[in-house]
Image 1 (cartoon, rainbow, N blue to C red):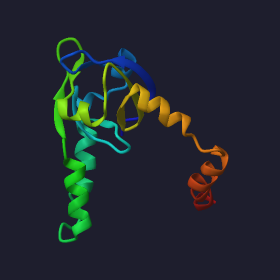
Image 2 (spheres, rainbow, N blue to C red):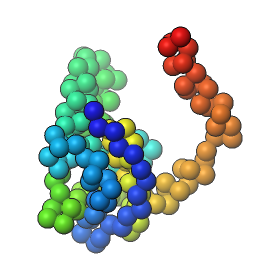
Image 3 (cartoon, helix red, strand yellow):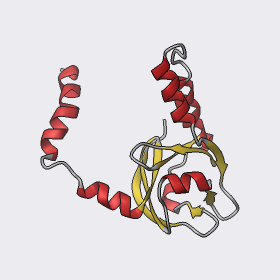
Amino acid sequence: MTRFLGEYDCKIDAKGRVMMPTALMRQLPPEAQERFVINRGFEQCITLYPFNEWELISAEVNQLNLYVKKNRDFVRYFYRGATELGLDGHNRLLIPKRLIEYAKIAKELVLFAYSNRIEIWAKDLYDNLLTDEPEDFANLAEEVMGDKNEEQE
């Protein structure tokens, strides 16, 4: 499983191309073969998955019972805008215009890499997201992660 890590400030050119940072490229697993799938993320960002990770996530989503309306709604939204991408000769990704508009990306963006994905944020939205940090991050950590520690005992 891929384990990305890091925040990278980048610029997008007029054609919608973003240069993948070298440090992030080094984290890309060989099985991804420099292929990605990009789609709409949560909280108005775009999510970029290495192709091998997308296949795992897609297989999980495809197990949902499509006779249940909320499952169909989720699947439609999840796949909306999903596009396969490859790197060009200069290690750039061409982000589809619809996704750029969805994420409100102008010139500056942040690649926030964690776990098996890279979130692509408009820099101002990302900076604002971080200013909305919970008043007591320690309480949030206990609420979210506390049960995990209890299960291991």
